[in-house]
Image 1 (cartoon, helix red, strand yellow):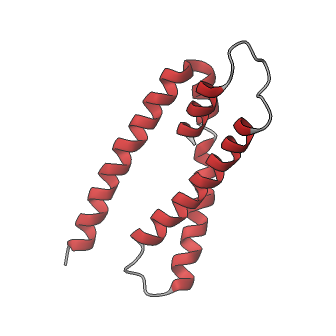
Image 2 (tube, rainbow, N blue to C red):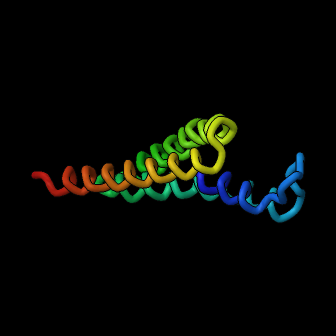
Amino acid sequence: MTLTVYVVDLLRPRGAHEMVAGRLALFFAGGTLGGILLAALVTWVLLAPIASYYRRGGLSIVSSFATVILMVVTLPIHELFGRAGLAALASACFVLALALAVLARRAAAAP
């Protein structure tokens, strides 16, 4: 979502007080939906050791909608710090995701 807001801000014409309808609104909605689906997919893959599809699916859905709550953080960061704040947040999220992926791999490899 952070990257979606960042790209929408880059593409928005300067001096416009309202978001231009059409492509930008579609990109914003698509980015939001894409973030939800990506969270569900990552959770599904990380929970591969769980044999029950019902449990994996339920936890993936819960995880994806919990991501929406965290998406709200992008709005005040964008208002306070602008594009630089969004770029910093996206970088921090990327580093955190890599660290958590390493921890998940180690936990899966542990006996």
